[in-house]
Length: 225
Image (cartoon, rainbow, N blue to C red; front, side, top):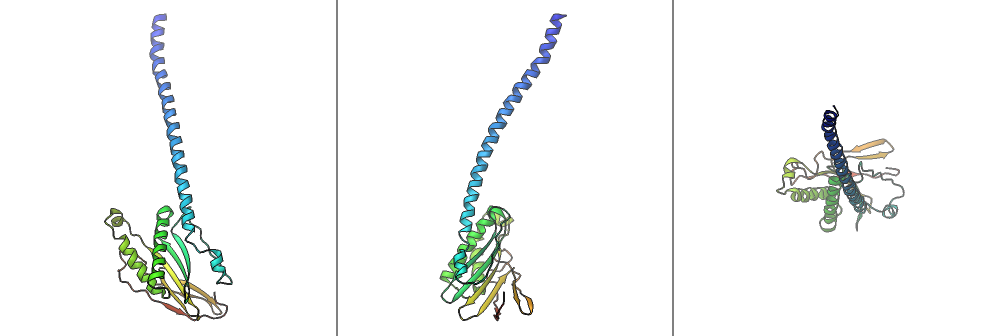
């Protein structure tokens, strides 16, 4: 009876011991993988936080806006740490340009688009045109489409682009607005007026390379916002 009991006990105990050993080995591997994932996650988050600093660097400084406007406010709250929205301010020899952009994508992809779009806008303003919002949108559409016309499969399955609105305020008081998927709201004595932008976005596959955007002239009045 004792011999039989020992044989049966060993047969029962051996699988249990093996299960315990395997479980401990698995726990050890899980702990190692968890530590590796935490390290990689920290590295990724550090990179994204640095990307946030880079993206914020393209936004205008408060000092720049305070030097021109008596009163203003700006709301910029990306859904993620970085995002696809941006606003820009440029002072030219004949006036000022205010630009608001909404790029496709959220997070890091959207942030990359904002950096690319802002770089192109700066090139257009410095080298091509700085007092014609519609012309700036047209040139941005052309440049962005040429840039995105790569042979990568991503371009075949996605449609990247942006919506944008541009206000030009000249030193003589002329105000022009052009929009691509973005409208302008003007508050005056008679209430709020909507200045519609074009419905056609910038850089998308369906947007013609030579699509013509149009300027809307706004007659400034005292107290307008």
